Amino acid sequence: MKIKKIVSMLFALTMVTGCMASFTSCGGDEEKTGSSSTASNNSSNADESKDDGNSEEKTDGNDFGGATLKVLTHRTDRIEDGSLKEVTKEFEEKYNCKVEYQGFTDYASDVSTMMSTDDYGDVLMIPDTVKVKDLGTYFEPLGTYEEMDAKYNWANQKMYDDTVYGVAIGGSIAGGLCYNKATWEEAGITTLPKTEEEFIECLEKIRDNTDAIPYYTNFKDTWALAQWTSLVNSASGNSNYTNELLAEKKDVFAEDSAHYKVFKLMYDVFSDPTLIEVDPNTTDWEGSKAAIGSGTIATMCMGSWAVTQFQEVAETNGDDPANIGYMPCPISVNGVQYAESAPDYNMGINIHSEQKDLGKLYIEWYVEDSNIAYNEGYVQTVKGSEMPEYLEAFENVELFVSDAAPEDLVGVWDQIDQESEVGFYLQDSANFKVRLCEAAFRGEGDEGFKKIADEINKKWNATRDSVLG
Image 1 (cartoon, rainbow, N blue to C red):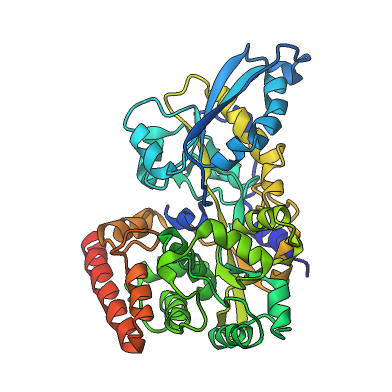
Image 2 (tube, helix red, strand yellow; image 1 turned 90 degrees about the vertical axis):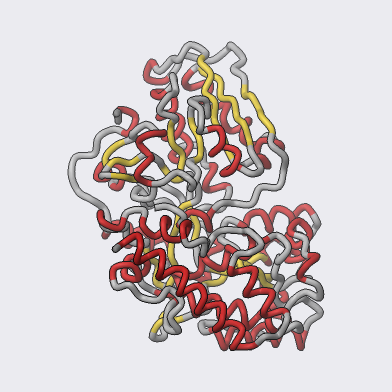
């Protein structure tokens, strides 16, 4: 079965029936999206797309009289290369308005600070620092879950009390790895790995049969380590995985848990200096984009959002962008591989905005008509949309969307993650992911991994029991 048919059927199973109100007429969990935030590498900057004053008659009489809509975004790269401004001209002409973009490299931190005031744009990507229960304090309601889920994927991601406050700009297959197809083929690999053991065997073949770095850690840029967290749900094969961990009060790093399996795989790869770069302390994210395109680097753990970035750099450098592949998480459950589909940032409307109607039209245009998500290689927000070709390796993989937390557990996972300071997506130097890497580099073996895993369990369980009672 083709992947787009699988996804279409999957989302159809979760579709809520009933009367679907027009999104444009709608009035008045979080951290799962942390894996999904795309890496942006340019400085904060702003761009204003201007109407030329010669617009034709506006569709459906939606004339906003030259009003300005301010949109906050993490895509500073698309502001700088002019592509966002160019594609937005269609929207400006249709609604007789101006769209002003303001981009932030450190988006979540900078915008979270702005939100201490009322002035944080009109439309913005909702930072994951906003607790689910506080969404209504900062953002305009966009519709009920029943209305939004009938049309859009991931409608439950920025939802509280059955009200949706954000719409995903697109999504990705959360659990996977980028690789250079030509390098893997040169190593004599004809079948992608389905288990941890097979994955390491493939890296060893690359080491023995090519001049490439089998796996590139990107250790210095610690956000890259958080990409391993995005493999966890896929490795579990369970759409209700995190809810069950909480409800049944299981150790998050029990030896049979998906967290344990994923980070033990990372640890085992990083423990073998022949499988990674010579000096992980001097890794270079920008340089790695070019290196995986040329085949100098064979493999990196990244969300599927990275594929188009790698392909663009490859094409710029004269390398074949078709060599950039994306493979499923090499961990199986009873012989079956799974992959979680997850959203990138969700767009919401500042509850203090004076352009709420125009903001709703902008969000609708962005996800339905702009083709931005398709051009970026995202899984698209609108249900039933065509899937990107680079996901061909997922043809025989079981895809799923993680279940929403039940009412008594809404926001609890993220609360425990933050208060315990375990921080599955955090990037600080004291984080367990960094400590695991350092222990691996020092060659501390299984005992070193188990020691850190036990510490994580203690911190997590103490906070969990305090929160849940």
